[in-house]
Image (cartoon, rainbow, N blue to C red; front, side, top):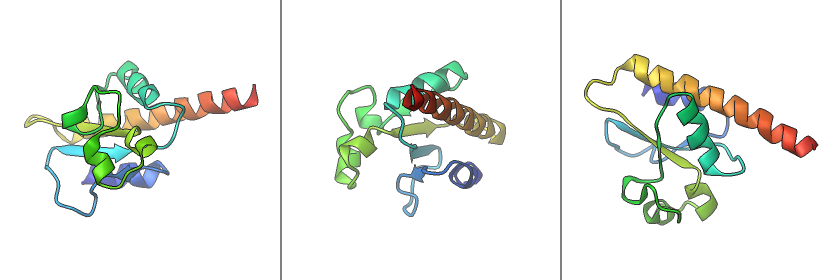
Length: 120
């Protein structure tokens, strides 16, 4: 919960999928701010040492938007920006903090890159 609160407070445009509903204790699905493609988030986070998944578990790795997210009312473009973060029994607060910091770093890098392209 602390991860979710801090992430949404510090990164404008983040939406937690199902935030008002009961969810799995170890999984957070987040609609991240728009960049030119969702893979940029995945690649940036991977380079920062964090492995994440796209969409819902039943559609991870597929090119088309998650049918679960579409059924929840997300537009295909929005569903394409959802990343899923999961933890295990040994995951602690430090791990969630590492993830949050990496997302912030990736956001800064993507924002700078997009600004550069818009000015060219």
